[in-house]
Image (cartoon, rainbow, N blue to C red):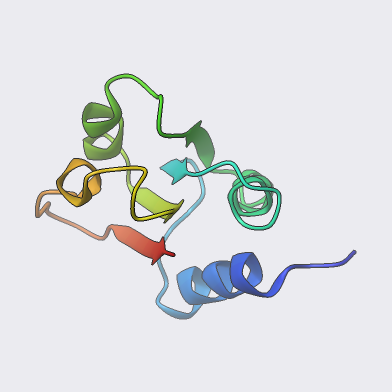
Length: 100
């Protein structure tokens, strides 16, 4: 199976830092064929519960705040940076911002 470098790297980071994925709520912001969809599928393969969001998703801030893992793969112009910032929470959480 071909694995795109960036999604594969994100999974490697999760494993390297012992971030639990099994059963966790993961949100992927962006639905591109190069990053958004592949990372969503990889997270599903790791048995996370995955929500894919985009610039038109309603209640995005609340979805993000309810997530344990957030991958933001979006263009700068699509979303306000404050929308997808997670508040400080107890325990381990993981957020990757890939803004282009």
